[in-house]
Length: 331
Ligand code: AMP
Image (tube, rainbow, N blue to C red; front, side):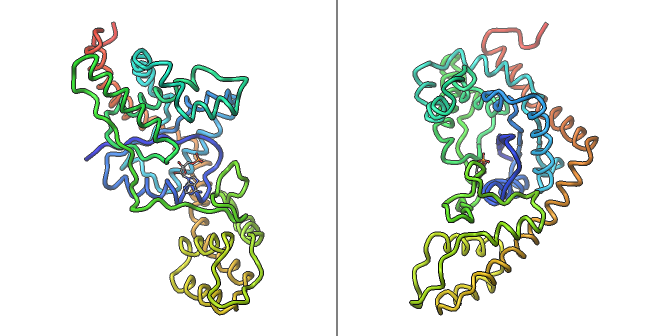
């Protein structure tokens, strides 16, 4: 089976955009690929979070991914900082990465703009740490969003350059990977194009039914159309996107017809949508609560994942040390 590696940013709770846009496809992917999912806690240090915040968000993310269906029997799920082999590969890759190319990475330039008082070397070398995360497992596929394409290009450059410098065919060049036929984009209920944490328009997987219903109730709408078959403004299109993803085809067809006949009642649509969302989120939320309250289980899963990830990375690092000219094992 082909090896797939994906990093998960430990930033806050998972929302519906994360679930339908990424996590759900991870759950399917674990049946078809040799998957490794890691919680990128080292990466999060570029913004200097408090230790207690790191601990809490790593635990939250682990519990939420498990609740969504990531299965430690099928995939390896581990915490990045548990596998120190990554750091050694990061060092070798940094030795062959150039200031110019790292400085041109758009995500670096963006971050440097966002945090002008903390443009640290970790931000600058983010792409080589990301390359080490993947190359240490010699993975061939990485599920990433569009914003990561330049980092993926850097990753391939790191692999190619290492192979060229040492005249080996050692690292494969990992490819960007979209598992679903088409990536779904989850809109915001505030009429914006995308649900996102920084936009404050998220429905979270840990939200209770009342919160979900309330958020749906507040969704932006327009007045009922007066012309049959009117074009839908963005906020209405967004509601229909939700129906498409969360409700039955009959429900969606019903409200389409109502819209086209100028008879739509948005209160009814929202009530139905809230019910359908609660039906999807309810069982996930219950599992989040179960996992979150079982520290021993989370610890066992993290330890087992770390062991398997270390075994994979240690094998690579033994070979890499030898290629680079060091003793394959540490004295
Ligand atoms: P973020 O929480 O913004 O770091 O997002 C993590 C991943 O979740 C992204 O790389 C996307 O794959 C997915 N994602 C986040 N928001 C959305 C959205 N509104 N629609 C679809 N996918 C999303």
